[in-house]
Length: 400
Image (cartoon, rainbow, N blue to C red; front, side):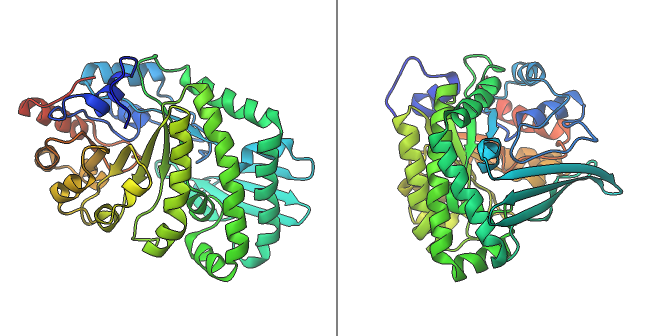
């Protein structure tokens, strides 16, 4: 991380040169946390959600800020994730058709992409009270690759050459940035190209592994195209006032060490080097098996500033948190350590005990206690407050 600067926002100041014996609480999703606190829904039922847009929610930024003030929890709101789909309206020969229809399971959204090389389609379902997911993906077999390749490469070209794409992405990010006070650190979501193109947004992981093995040259060409588009998005985020780029990468429960070495590490490093050159910081989310990645120096090789989620078994494999946190050293701040599943259980003492354990095992390092992934539906209110209260009783809570 950079040296001491007086103009840094409070949470960043603490990460860079604040007292590591003080512990902030930072939950993954501020909207869901505020929904828990106020006892209101976090999303508007009957509306389709999306992984590529900031969801419509009854929870306002003012409610999130009030929750932060009254509980002492810190915020790290996101500005959304700008994918290749944002460039379609500026492509002369690619058309996107979207229709939605109610069903017994909730709301289905059907998306069709028509390209000169063929047609792609997917189905996304938003069930009431449960997480949204894909039922069908744009890419299912090698027969879909010509159309997919045309779309990804054309999106990269248009994003780099057409200033209207930059203006649209920057305006979208700025609209989110302006919702928050100047002292709140905000991030834009990005992803290393290999993960972005193979992790359900476009294809399921089973299809992805076959395609990476059988069509490696083509997939690598698409990774390079996505990297060029990513560079545009990161520049837009910096212009819009973001503080971090935040990307998710599954751990070794899904991707192999060889994939990390060949793709994820160099791609993440390229993103983070650009981010640092633009004055942004690099935040990486890995919620599964990351013990070996920590022990082999993967995150240092990626030039990471903030790392989450340090999930313990059975969701992750960080069962020696103190050892792994020490291995990361003082140049990387961390967040998480309390599994999502524990926050859902009716076991307040379990939450308190794990909170104490995490605080003790990360003592002396900059660590933000929080959950290990996004939460939907929202956690029980008392579970979140139990973590905050336990740190307060320990005398180590860093209040917002």
